[in-house]
Image (cartoon, rainbow, N blue to C red; front, side):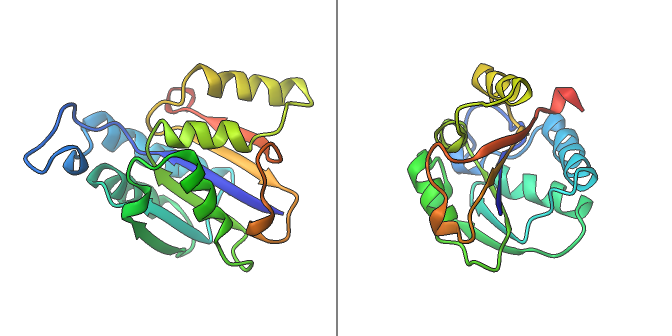
Amino acid sequence: MKRLLLLRHAKAIPGTTKSGDHGRPLNERGKLDAPRMGIAMQHKRYLPDRVLCSTAKRTLETWEHVAPELDGKPEVTFSDELYLAPWKIIANMARAQPKAANVVLVIGHNPGLEECARALARKPRMDDERKRLDTLNEKFPTSALAVLDFDAETWSEIASGAGVLTDFIRPRSL
């Protein structure tokens, strides 16, 4: 089994900075929500072997606040390609991960992350799975985490419509 964790960056300051959108830091709420999501991930044992993180300041800061709450030291890759990436780029980056990694965390941006979760999730088969997908479709807010499980031995096997949306956590539900 392979598990994909899709984490939207925490809440950032609005507008742009001198360095543009890419340089927007977290606001106070984001600095509170990110470690709370890390605690939730630790509690539920959503512990990544590998992390793929956009190079935007808000995603880097999100990881800086989440990481101390998690057991382990995953391999982390910071990628310019993930900055505002469309869902197919995100999915292809996940598919390129080594077989040895069983849990991959992607920290990125909307709408790409939300579209990726929708594209990879299967049609719900049970009521609780349907409720999670309905909640995701309603809104994928900052600091939200989608957890998708795939019956696959390698990352290259993960396909659209094949992932089980095991969990969807929003900061307001913590």
